Amino acid sequence: MKPCVFTGSAVAIVTPFCGDGVDLEAFDRLIERQIQGGTDAIVVCGTTGEAATLSYNERMALIERCVRTVDRRVPVIAGSGTNSTASSIALSKAAQSAGVDALLTVTPYYNKASQSGLVQHFSAIADAVDIPVILYNVPSRTGVGCTAQTYQALAQHPNIAGVKEASDDFDLIQDTLNLCPPDFTVWSGNDGSTAAIMALGGKGVISVAANVVPREMHELTQLCLENRFLEAGTLQLKLHELIRALFCEVNPIPVKAAMELLGLCSGELRLPLCRISERHLEQLSHALEPFRPAV
Image (cartoon, rainbow, N blue to C red):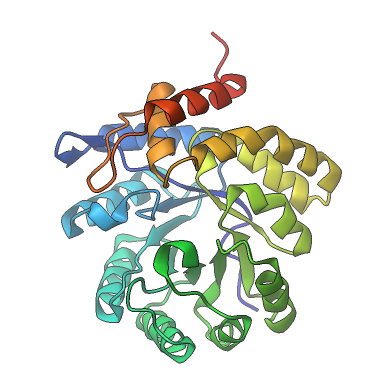
């Protein structure tokens, strides 16, 4: 039986920038805020962390800093997926050497691999490391998605721990849970689907919203894990407007704006991502009001 990498809320942590570089001191502060807020795991260099525009050296500096700052208090999961199997293996090996607890590997974007190609791609990554690999299915961004039968095949690999499911395809999620063994974990990849996926048997969420509301996302997942779904549903509804605002433009544009509004770090992004529009900034600011700390 494979151990579960984490249960609860894992933050897909943003990368704070300062001019042309990464603001590692601000990154440390964000990590501490997450741990104090009850976050159950930290995902570094994911989509929300703008991994696509980080250099290799920046990526490794962030991973190493995250491992050192977290200091085993919660699991650290490194985004190591690319659209090249060889590059994904190299990043995965480097992240393992840096001391991460697990890896998050996205379906290869742009190439649009077949299901057989996906099985071979993820299997090659998992063969190359000795730590758990979490698959990441987000077809709206990559142009390709996994089937339940692909998950069934990959679930047999001893290093493949489960999937971050961001398709919002509930037929796929139910088929996956029916076909795969109990030690193949499903985590929600969309904040707004957290309670629903956990009601089906998911074990938590890899969350964008947790950057802003770590305590609430942790509480939401704990309520679900305790089978207190009526209370979880109430909290999910309370978070609805904020979550909608955090996705009013492509992630991570709104969440970086929210972090700046809250004074947590710079809202700087790297092209081709650009700052949020004034109209959406107003929507975001309004949605943040119930969650601003009392003065």
